Length: 65
Image 1 (cartoon, one colour):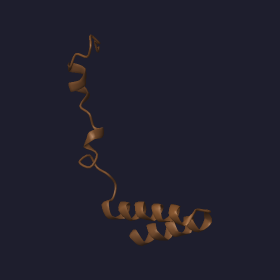
Image 2: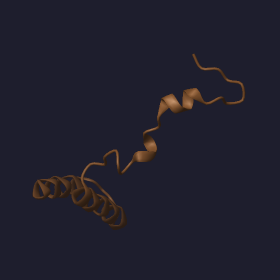
Image 3: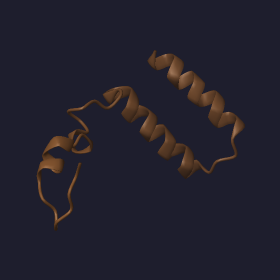
């Protein structure tokens, strides 16, 4: 899979008119993705708020249904 991702990346970069710096940045993030994979709940725990806790709290007189 890693080889295919890199091959696809190289084909796409060839067809774009990007600066060397932009290409390096994109390569950095591709390498990061290849090493870490897709983010999961543990990696992005801050995105998963418990709505029940939020609804149960009273915020300046706002009432939730």
